[in-house]
Amino acid sequence: MDFKGIPVVTFGPGSQPEEADGATLSYLDMPRGMDTYRLPDIPAADDIAHLGAARDTVAWLRNALRNAGTQQHAIADLGALDPASRELVNQVLGEGEVSITTAGALRGRTQESVLAGVWRTVYFDNQERAVADLLEVAAVPHLVDEAGHGLETVDCSSDDVPAEVMNGLPILAELEAACADYRREAKAHSINLTLLPLSDADVEFLDQRLGRGPVDILSRSYGKCQVTSTAVANVWWVRYYNAMNTLILNTLEVTKVPSVVAAAPEDLRDSAVRLEDIIETYLEDVG
Image (cartoon, rainbow, N blue to C red; front, side, top):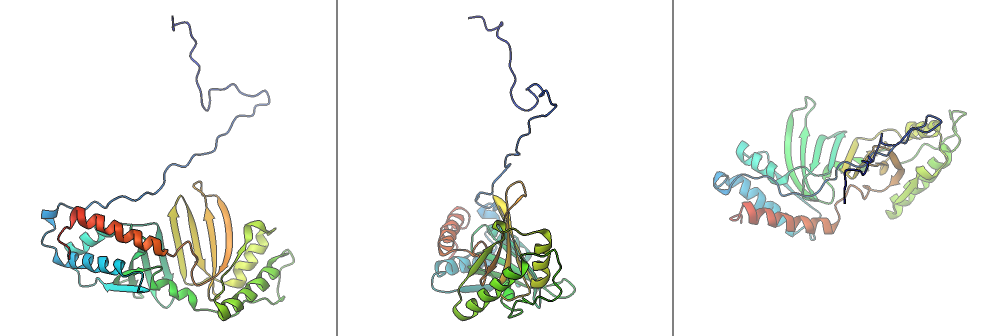
């Protein structure tokens, strides 16, 4: 068979003729990446054999993860680590998907490690100097507890409501009832704003009435999720975006902490297994 006479046909954007009306085909951007777990890049065993403080920290972490099902929170103070040991601990922990900042009475930043439920929290003074460096094993770090403090009631008054606001007040009334239920029975509640006919004026009104709380959380995986506490205790804005940064779900949640942030018990068990893989590969003599 002679292939020389077969014409070459191209495919993809730009390969097709233009339409008679001048319109062109457009294509959705495809996702370009997704976070996956990788073992951290740790130096050779001979290079870290002298770092006893780092090994003690990893041993503490192993024990805390093993006991995660029987204790709600475990905290270790890393302030006394020497620079070399601190660097090794940083390499073991890596950087996970969830970042948390607070600007309340406690000023701090928390970064989840590659091990779900293992958090690194640094607290700062008013001059942004680090005053505490903590390693935490828990569903959520203590930093998030700041969002549990705030106004006890939602402002549902009809005073000074802009004329263009149509559905803001009923949502505030629902939130007020949900907050009362939560204080009485710890019953969580969620309002899916994406499904409601809300104008920009409604959203701005809700934001003004609820106010801003001290805690901001960003969860990055396939797309991202932004979680922000309000000035009302246990009321959160939760916004989900797809990989193209388009808002796909907007909710108000009444709960201690939204589930997207908290590590589940199975996450902590999985982290214990992952840490054993790290120890077996790089730190065999950890106690």
